Image (cartoon, rainbow, N blue to C red; front, side, top):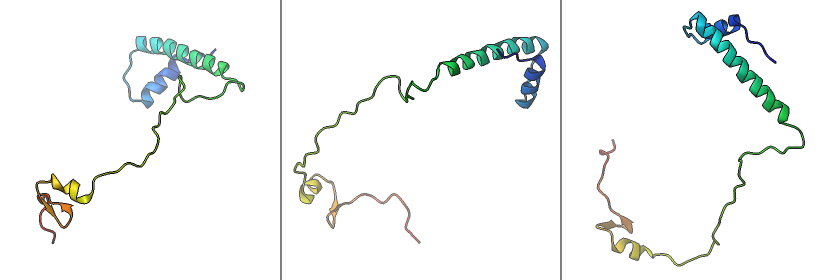
Length: 99
């Protein structure tokens, strides 16, 4: 059981550059005490016989078979292009001339 004092909360508030009132110091001390107690309880549960997990639910990847299929030839791919040049798509220049 941890006991956070008002002085420790005030010190943390100064480090974080937070302006807190005296009433807030009392409230925050109690809240921080509860948080630390909860974290300690979680630490008690973790034992060596429980394997570490990265996800709460098992993940399974679904892969399709890697099958070679025919694709478009260069001429077929360029047939629908508005402009082609030297076997490539011709597009408008968007950058200025290189110097």
